[in-house]
Image (tube, rainbow, N blue to C red; front, side, top):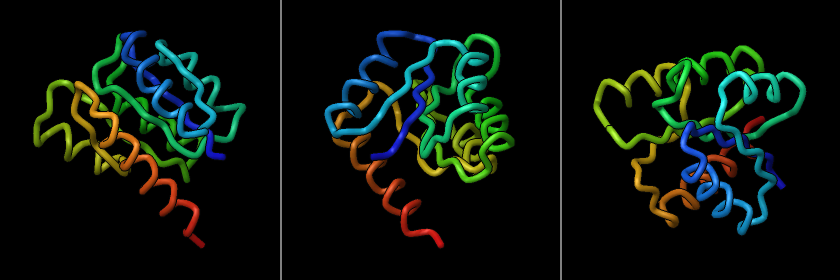
Length: 124
């Protein structure tokens, strides 16, 4: 099963996403600190990162850029409670595969994760 990193500075939000994904059988590693998440990514293979846009030290797009340097093939879904065209464009430019708006809709998240991981597994 796929391994997913979840990073959100609000622990309750990260726990909610983690619970949804664990119920689907994914291996989930939850973080509320950017540095710890990036350190984990340096030493562990990940299939997907789910990143909040607003974090404490960096924004989600900056974290995504770092993750892409560490693991160029990683896929990502960005989460935001403040959607704008600019953040969506920045996310896509940095390589995000999806964009979900908070509050999280369980079905939307499950579908986005499944679609991204299926497309990742079918890549050559």
